[in-house]
Length: 467
Image (cartoon, rainbow, N blue to C red; front, side):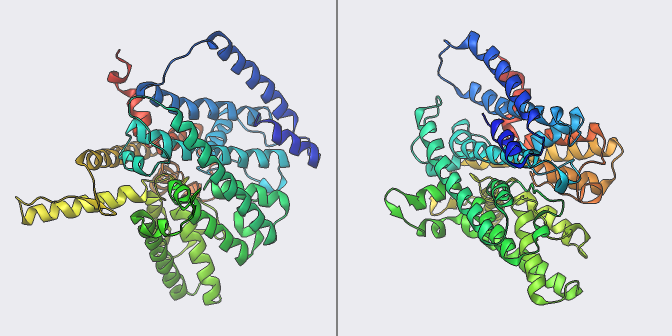
């Protein structure tokens, strides 16, 4: 059904881009019916093992089907590899694009790219808040206490459907509010809707090659920053703050992850502002602050929107911003990266090890918001961090072995694994110039990043497939 709205957009704007979506809709319907009909009477509870497979197939199958309209479309004329890359980049909310000349594309294609990001963002929220805590992936058990409604370890329960429904309402409300704010600030209706999709999904796609910089509006920049920060927070917090019992904003300020996330954003903005102001690139302190705040929040939350080419900024700033994307946003948000909570736990664990060196017989617990965490969660976070680093190094080395220069390989791997989008070097603006082999490597990096590494890695272990 999601293939029909872009066709409707094509009719409204008479841009001739609708036929590709009608063809894709028919093909998708035939494939879906063929797979569903023989299995329509099959009923079975989903256990943990099926949960892993289901989550991976969700992105792989839908990402593949999502590429069909790009394959059928005459404008832009994309190869099979480019079509898959664009689709997976949208669905995983990475925002890396191979398309040049967005301003002249049919409105239907532009709308479809943003719709894919928006649907992917909703999938990520349900994955991170409702499903991964059940699967126990990489320390996500921590969020079980914050999930609306209890969930059991043994099997997927109806509570997950209820949780998903509640999260859907929050997600939809934020999207509408963002679109209205963009429209009030000067965007036309089409741009406002498209950019609200990619903002709340923290995707980074735009309808213009110049991204948010096309509008040249401090008001639009500030709206984008505010909604990126809201979307980078744990959606369980939004649920708790706006529950049926009334609005309770104190929930945010009691959350350790929220406080650290805001502190990181303030620190990054201050460093960027001081460095840019000292270098004298921009004419006024206000303009400098506008660029510093927007790019710091956009890159560190893994959105990847641009008002300026941050890769051309002086000194260490481009590398600093790329490294900030490794932290990303909160767990249970649409942001990518390792997540703020895991970074907090890694730092607390490091601090505990230092204390143990001084007091070998001492008993030290790790506490978050006054609650002691079991060592199982800490072990899972360390395991996640190790796997994340391993996947990063392997992808980067493979890209370099294919002939990519070191800066481009490093930033492209970071941008795709962290679901950021823009990188440095050859991939600063888009990914059109790199080879097909490199695109497939980066496509897998997007999946690893989006599926929290372990969810995909577990499928490659013999233990998973043993009965």
